[in-house]
Image 1 (spheres, helix red, strand yellow):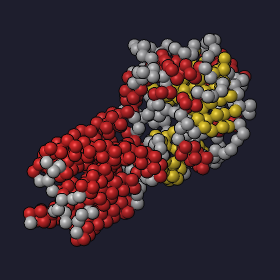
Image 2 (image 1 turned 90 degrees about the horizontal axis):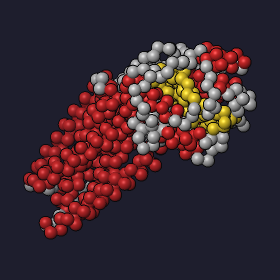
Image 3 (image 1 turned 180 degrees about the vertical axis):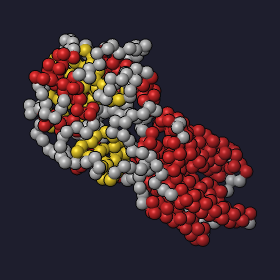
Image 4 (image 1 turned 30 degrees about the horizontal axis):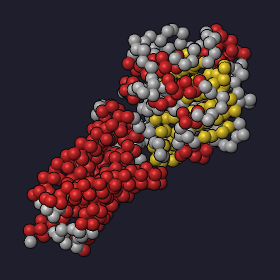
Length: 549
């Protein structure tokens, strides 16, 4: 019966499970928020802060409640309630994320509000478990210290297990929706062990009710899409979506809701996004370049184009996400080519044992995420060691040339200029200084400074079919980039996300992103809440009558 005191080992197991679920929920929470808010430091800061605050409140409330009613029945109801709320997260998240997104709080503070609405309530309940378990397990005040230390260590052990199991087993193997549902099911399953058959039947029925809306929703994505979804999956690093647009005749790869690569469905390697065409300007600075390195693969748009246009070139591509590489091979026409090698690892780690390159293209940057360790002085010092004497670095950045949306670009120019003697900027859409756009930064190891006439001459002497190099050379930004900051990004201090924040809130149309909207009828969500709360009320009243006997 639920009114009886549970066994010591049963309580300890529940504490272990709750500790594991807390960490699993926090880690999976990043995957729920990433498609809307990216995978930035603000997302992780919001998650960690909200979870810690909720746990603190749960410790306080759980301790006070345990002193008043140290009942195993109430203890089990806390676990069941947490499980129910967790199972409701996949059902309510599309609506909640849509509301937060449309509220205008932005990518900096939006994750805080979303984390509060989605995770705070179940985490508070999970925080109540530890102090409640201490009160129920302590025989007297004399063994209170040993009991509390033992239970808190068990909870921490559960958190450690939950961290490793979620990161290395669950996320690589299952979808976010299934993982979150499983967390709720696990909590409810361990809580019903001491119940009667009737009570177990009630809880089982409640779980079926909660699962039904998800079955009707089809387990669809949290975001609306424009076009036909070819594949959508959660990778170890992001949410990956591939969309076919019949109207445009294109296939586009989205990572965390932002376009990263696109190709024409007719098999042409002509660039869909203009900025990828600009990678060719590297050959204006070094027409004899042969060894090329791409850090960031995506759909391999740039590498495929280079292999087609430059017969003497060999291309190495470093992509950190193995699922991105697999999708590029399956859906973006990437085939085995003796002139191209693919490495699945971090770009900076790759450089440690890399050879020498004539051209290095950095394309691991998006509107919502900056891999800061690929933007620091130390990184470019390491890169310089692997550049040929006439080597060229090409980096794709999203920025403006003036205003608060140019701060990251200016910091990056300052940083690279501390290592490589010449830095050039090519706006890809317009010479309007305040326009947010893809800007191609080119840095050369050669001390010779090229002007626009030199580049136009090189473009005329080395034409590339289908690539208007002369037009691109004509977009060279010839003015001095005004900067009131001498900030240089280092491994010790690189506030990339803070510098990026004005960009995330500014309009940017290149490629366009997936438009968030709710994929569930709000009536289903409201119905699930009402049925769940009514069922919990019925169970709680029965428990109260049992406890009072």
